[in-house]
Length: 363
Image (cartoon, rainbow, N blue to C red; front, side, top):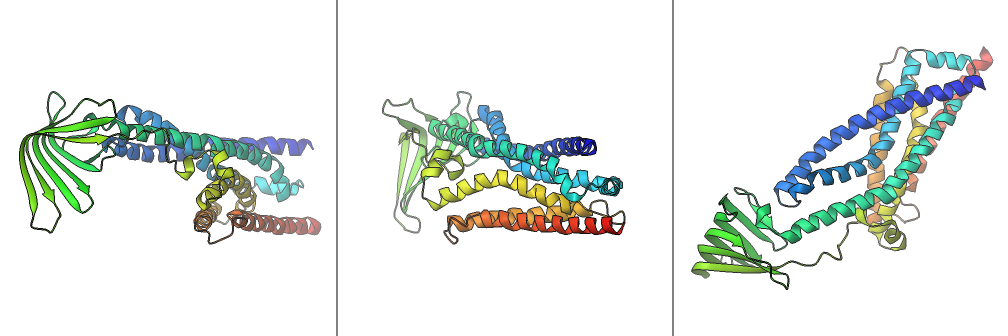
């Protein structure tokens, strides 16, 4: 019993430290990638520039729920693979510690992390998505020329207008402006020397004003176009209220998903529940996949494990799409993927355990 307790603490320390390092490295890589995406959205006026760090933090929370299962899987593969390479596992087998005995500490660790991932996936990540969507909607509602950058084509607010300005004046107005907007088959083009936004109307209507320009209006391909030269011209546009956001499925609260019969909501609910389940299934797979011999390459088990994880993740993604399209029944959903890999992992462990027992009986 003392040996098993020492082994449990040893495994938990090795896998825990490796998991922390792996999670940190993967999170850093993905956060850097997300940072470029957030900067791109801010440059396109889809996000306020003063909210970049907040959006990045909210995105990091969502990434943590996805990274934890794969980080633990890699941590167990690396930690147990090192035990095999350094012949420590051979010593444990000689002391009567078989592959099955490794599961008690590892599954306790996996269960604790599964609870964490479940909380992140079911509660924290959807709330973070809702905040990101609210921030983006507020940016669209502001529809402020201050968000537009000179020298770039940008969509202005919710109006569908495409605005381009050569430069920005000292007073904040835009100079040498090009505007395009569509209404059905008809297109309207405005070329103006200067543009600025009028004061907010109490009814929620704003006015985008132009001076010293021309307006071209007509149907592309038709010879009849209306051309108007103006000294001053204005385009009114209204800002819709954001009280009722049309949330994406990944931002909808858990109560919504539980009460919904929509296929997308069912697929989203099963996806969230799959993340903590993935922690347990990957831990089952990691023990037999980490087995190696001194003659094998140092990272042979790790490469096989990565391939297994890619297959697992791709099948889960495909199963989610099939549930959304109603190609598979909801009761089958994503669960068959977890069952398939869990059974495969248990089979590999049972075969490995039988080999260990045969060697013990021969000895």
